[in-house]
Length: 500
Image 1 (tube, rainbow, N blue to C red):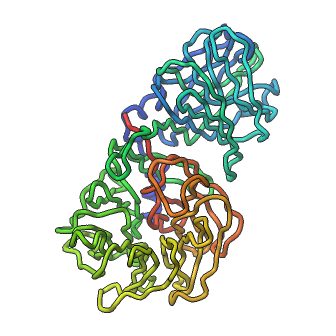
Image 2 (cartoon, rainbow, N blue to C red):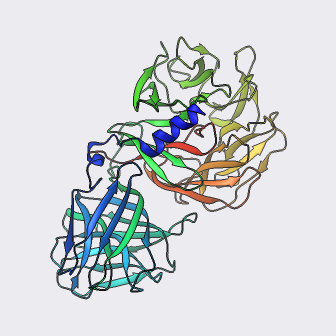
Image 3 (tube, helix red, strand yellow):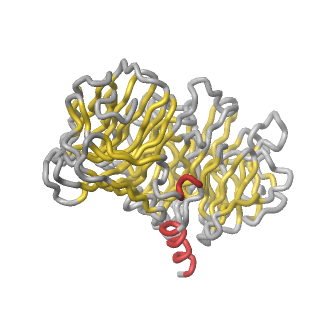
């Protein structure tokens, strides 16, 4: 009970660690009314829940002039704006509206583009390419979405919307001759000059993506350590850094998260909101494949601290740190799971340049045992809490899909079959749900790159319809390892952005 109470305090009441997130405007620099509004608007930021409530009036955002309330900041170059938003109350005019807006200035007729959801469900990207022009639009077939995303990519804007749980519908509008620096933020317009309306926004993210010329595994951008309530989708950033942190494990005592960064392993204390290095002696080139034993006493590591010819090898160490014990003789070997009884480790291993799934006694007392034998990539193996299955992802069908098998490698069965590339199945403590990472179809089946727009999705353990539970910018390092809270109510993961 004490540990559950501690986590509730951390999730719902802890202050954000970013200095900018501690002011009354959250991540935004300014708030204002644009145009000749009759009633002053307002922006409220709840630091504990990281939600925004905007109120405002305004006759319309249309033709050659706009009237609305705006919470914004200056952004340069490419960016991704994302939120889960809703209008509050019954409203007066069916065309009251909310969403994201990007403007060249604060004059009522400034060039702009906005991703808009109206009170009657009408959803569109609306834009004015030059000052004083009439607004144009492209309507979405999705009515009344609550997930709203507006992305600038060079001279194009991409508008993406979804009803929570579903994948995005996306449209591109090209050929915007806009300056590098823009004003970007949330807006509300009542569509009735005499009325003030309200809207609420949660999971608000401004993402500054990796530059196009970044070199994977050499160049990195910033990281947000996030917690999410699985059933509601409510998310909270609890820690932000300018470098790369990856793959949080959740300790079984509910007191900490364990992640890797720049070759070291860190323990993030959920009570103090501070990280500290977990000592692993000579094993210092750790990657993001680290896993806790079911009893919480041991930590398995994947590290290239051994012979260079082997690449990644597997080690084990007490959860409090110490001198690791080498388990695998050969490499590369990437750890993904412990058996519930603690006797076995399961991992992906490259042997003769083919990557399949193996298991080995966790004390290193016996040889490795090959569980899959495919010419394509098998990865992400993880035991179910009851020990009856090993779940994994495989590219054997041409796309990366989720599979499961018995612990001896028999009875391999496919669980997902869709257009997305599905990685890293993580089974809930009650053995009922799987959360996994999904890349868009254009990503190669055998690749799991950094810095892409991805989904976290959820299915029943036996397969079934997948529901999107998080929309984010991340990928490699986001959720490579088991990260459910001990009570199964929350998960931890990493999202990415250039961090100021």
